[in-house]
Amino acid sequence: MSTQDFADLTLFITGPTYIRPEIREAGLLPEFGHRDAENLKRFGPIMSGLREIAGCADDYHVILCNGSGSNGMEATVRSLVADGECVLNVSVGAFGDLYHKMAVQNGKKAVQLKFAPGCAIDLGKLEAALAEHKPACVTFTHNETSTGVVNDMRAVCALIRKHGALPLVDGVSIFGGAAIDLSGSGAATYATSTQKSLALPAGFGILFVSGEAVEKAKTVQNRGFTTDIVAQLGRAQKQQTLTTPNTTLANQMAVQIEHIVHTEGIKNRFARHETMRDMTHAFVRSLPGYELLAPEGHRSPTLTAVRVPQGMSAAQLKKVKEAMRAKGYLFDPGYGKLNADLEEQGQRVLIRLGHMGDVTPDMVSAYLEALRPELLK
Image (tube, rainbow, N blue to C red):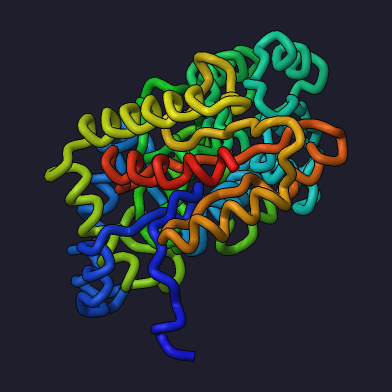
């Protein structure tokens, strides 16, 4: 097989995302030793830039976990839920379910509060679950990638804290695409990754950890090795990773964070995502029989899930995917397991329209116009 066999498609899926040429080129920068002085030249600006994007200062530690956002999420479960304590996993979709799966497979006393696809967290139902289960920690998804639902992080965290629990937040698909104002959020931890709204290759989980979470972790036994927040923090405070990082990705990340903070500008980046979201919503409203899934007030700035017309099947959507491939785009025919469940229940299936990272409004416009005839066939 040669490199000519690999299609160079513009990705409009919900991660990994389109990587602009400058970031591809940054992958050719020199490798370096991750315990050498060269390391600080990359990771010093990376970690300070991540804090700026998050809207926090030294009130949160920044840890880079080798792997993906899932590694950061699992670290919070292993490091912050002690034996005998209850963790409440709140789910509005597939990735909320994943947090619950992690808790169960790590042997934690886990209970789940689950909402139907397309619904945001109901604070009344959450309060009832908090009162019933009295959890030590509560996990929830800020921006659910399978459904395009964004939850009110500040309100959810405040309610969790009212009941004396630590909020552990999954922000994988929104970080870098919208303001999260982490310092005022109430989150004890916030996990994200490189391959979605930061528009980088996959390879690092990014974990913001409050001081209180660190102190709690010190009291928890059996935290694992790469999932041990305390061990990770020891290296992070030296602007390093616990284990050997992907130095190619580190070079790309240093260049991209510099671009986001100092060239595009953080506020401009967030505003661009809002523009692309609004363009996508207008496009969906122009299609007969198509409907936005997430309710008003809970629609993601980085991706949009759409109910297709009654009678359109997941198999048909895969044909749309191939038609768009022929046009040079990678289309998202919806989250596979969710669509399978919806079809089994006789409900309308979903597509997802990604509008995150480094795609521009002009790119989104061209993509949607190429997609329109395929969806109307």
